[in-house]
Image 1 (cartoon, rainbow, N blue to C red):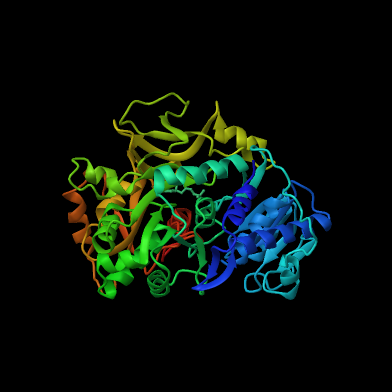
Image 2: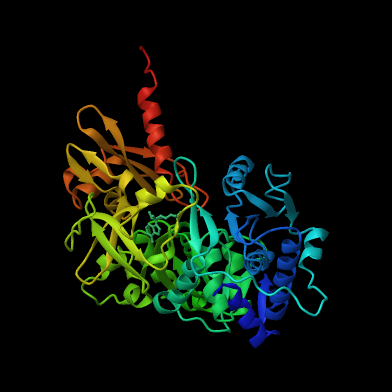
Length: 518
Ligand code: AMP
């Protein structure tokens, strides 16, 4: 069993069906995609790459991304897609750690040679054209057989602290994730189009698998990234698009729709399904998204260690506003996806009853094989067959999981636990607030106090006293922020996650700075 067979099957079935597009222009039909991947696979094997060797992709979103991924799998190799926004030195660290031998790059992200790579191919060069030109000989390379537990993708965790770890994602993990999409996320037909606006090195790229399974079109926008006007227009041209987006991207799409007076029907003409996840989606934001764009949304919760597949909040749960638990469900990440079990455990791994808050554990066929050459980290994250996600949450009677926070983000003030997410949800409903991030600051009296970083909506002026009054009527007094810091923007990592570590460091630096008169 191997991901390669998904491509071979489609190429045999409908070789002329459009497969990969750049904007609205055809880049490859299914038959061409398979022929190019087979050709590159053969050339990599002839150049000495052996099954299990690692191949780096350090590229902006590009139609050739998919051809290279499947070429690598065809040759039995392991792909190492890294985010295009990483610094060259960070990528070189990954190259060394993964011992990647070949690398595919776009010149804008890697203008120079990366240290440690034996071969570096610019995907827009004549060399790449040659490598991908279908081989003329009668018998192209047969796909190299892979076992279900062989590693297919080394995913370096985005890691807000410390060195990234290489998550070993197997053929089985990816196949299972792809199949679960059809049950837990959405149906896909061959007429559909998946658009890669978010980085293909991450969740968005993984969704190539279910869309290949269904023989759908794979669209890389001409800009290669997120341009709401371009995406809305592309959907009108190609038919409604499906995509994966972090909540910050969803917000940009909704802002665009609102600013241009688009109706939910207009949104339906451009988008079939927007899957969101990767970071918290606040209730106020998803309510607005549903109001402006209509029932286009599905949420997933996962992590590199169980890619795209821990829980899902289905369209019907997002839209059933008559349900007595509707708001609680909007605040949740949904129920366990079909291939996994989810439970909540105390620090010692014991099961916690419904409603109690503890660490989220996941078990099933999407869970990684472990961390690359890091048995200590693997032993810490995988215990008794369960993945310890480091996320804190609670399950309700019906199985809906509500995430509180990452364990390290929990604030303990005067001995009470405060989950920043809860305070953030409340502040986001205050007039004039666009974004907010709540963290703990060291405090001699309380241990930690709650500090809120607030980004105001354009043109809005917000008074601290108003925010305080807003909190007082909605959450316990001890959870209210003791301080507000107004900022123009929040620090975020390459995937749009707020860097709470940076905010905490900022508070620490301020506390350490000598004050006037010292
Ligand atoms: P990564 O491994 O970079 O994909 O990051 C995974 C982490 O992102 C998870 O452990 C969660 O903390 C967070 N995350 C992912 N999906 C969601 C979601 N739907 N809601 C809230 N947080 C999420």
